[in-house]
Image 1 (cartoon, rainbow, N blue to C red):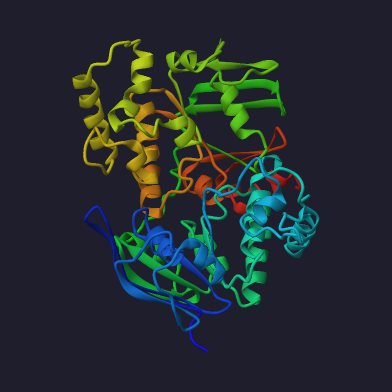
Image 2 (image 1 turned 135 degrees about the horizontal axis):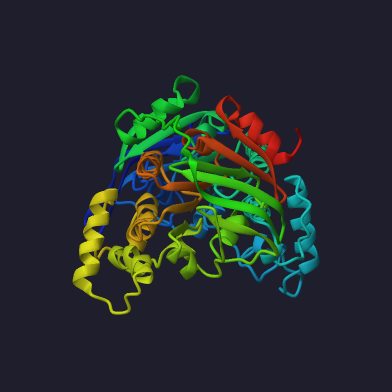
Length: 494
């Protein structure tokens, strides 16, 4: 039996710029193949050609030996190729069943939608995925992990042969990720080919059979996962050796406590106490819903707390708004960089200058000054762009995150909170973000990192504070900073 999918000589250009250069790629029956590369490497373009979202300029595609001609996404789905996008493609105000069978609804003798049959079939599909989701509820009422399972149910609602998954664990907890991995293995055991796009190299080693790496639109190579290490995959992606950041031994100046949080209660938070020293990088870890982001929003004045106090340099402060926090020399890079971190339709210069203007009470826009400060941040943070007028929405994820940091660094904060600093960012850009954070700490800035990535907090934070259901359940330093200890404290099963 030949390959399930065989793509040969894939080439594609956008606006005269070639983004794929005669790339070969294949998937076998029942195989899980990881597709890796930095942002802009061509991963999404390649799979979108397979899904007929994009047309190809050159090359051939075969599905089980059948040559696929230029066709539509709907035709490709009928042939058994389904793509689950990173940003889930569901209709929030329709029911689960309606989403699963959208454009493929069962009908009765009168040609009308047979809702009873549709709900029954949806329930059976979800049960086959070990999911107990009511098919009649609206999608907007579901959790992210449940929505992803609805997408998978939608994918297997017809005779699926290939499933493309783009960063499927980006917003999942550790437990939810384990459930997804088990499901992926089950689907592969049925002979379905899985194309798994991810930046998380630990996942590649755990879930994939082979890994294909692209760089700058070229095929670097395809390897059996058992034959390569995470570091070797990273080096293939960026074209050079990648040194993994290790948290420095410097734990801040313990004689200079910059921030103290005492007995904070509110929302789900219960009696929160911690302090951070000048020059320290402290990580907050825990499962989704543990209260980490809520705590940071309270410190920054975006959310009220019922009791307790925040102290800066030993003095109690009242921070009622983001403007007050900025005046108190705090910065907060939120986790949703496209929603609350940036204005995507504005330029780098405008985005990077916003907090500076707020702090310095500048009401008039002076393009010359804005562009000057923008150029300084582009150079300082090595933002890859065509200039200060480059629209943020047209930057890669890593460069967008640098603009978020530029926005806050322009105001020279003494304390910088960074929530999910590298979510959805490739390994090369991730290392650059870590270097920036380490550099800030060496300058005496106090950094608080909130991250769902245990490897991240262990690699960059000297101290890790773990939360569970609104409480601090562990403070890990030195040799106690291990994944096992984080998991135990995060689940509160010590």
